[in-house]
Length: 429
Image (cartoon, rainbow, N blue to C red):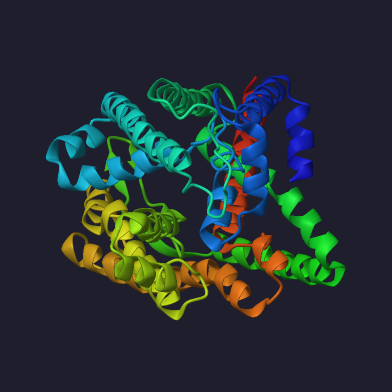
């Protein structure tokens, strides 16, 4: 990776894109540390430092420490990512969105516009929920101090609008990084959120126990290597194109392959499951005493067997569901048939679609198991490690490692492709 970055900085155009991307990342981190107007910074720091628990740690990790600190960019990239996932799901259900998806660049532009509108709506909902919980004293359990200087309606409205504006600014920066930077703007911002809290986690673990720090660091390196191996794994389905003669020229006759990744769903099932399991905790204060007690015992602690079972089952279900809506074997088989391609030993058309569907189903099973193991790693660590401080600061969750490795690999591939493009242009000149 360092070699790729060194080569990229030697190209003036890529150097400008990298510096532009780094500048936006710095601005993004500044917005995540800047408190929203009307927030008691001292009370928030004291309560956020003493708060602990698997769900709170996950919120801190995925928001870069901004959500519980009620900063300007407290919502981060989650509203936009959630809106993008919802639009992908709606494209399967709503025929109009499916037609826009197939129209090419114009259709994608309209879908992007709808995604922005949905992002604003989700940001308004998320910001209202967070500020309402902070106003009622339920955002950080065990915090007796008020987090807002003025709990009045005008002050709360200003804080909510500030967070919504921050989410819109983050969305704009992500799209700007994609257009004028090195690409993958939203993914890079999510990568920044996760990586930003790692030094603090690791330093606290080292202070608590240097031995635990060494063991956790070694285990983290092994986990990263395993994630890289699985993320790069794919099943290559060979495709042969028939030779065609048009006039005096012949076309086709080449062979290629259709890559089918083991983890075809990516991190989406883990995000869906985490959001779904977080809902009972949010609505628990509004339930009767018996129901609230049951939720707090069974669905709040990550070490509870019922929570782990629900986590695994939902991740597997969402993995199969997301792969089924993002990869259409019939469409792939039809495209191969149109261009004269076929899988050796398989007839074109419906048999090819059935064969591809069978392969995708077989690959989704180990992919879902892989995601479930990654998601269960921090929960198992919470159950094994008896030191509360180590539990609270456990950084190597499967979600965070998957984000870091996946985005890191995609970014390196983007830079390498742009470097190769510049090399070919220089050769042609």
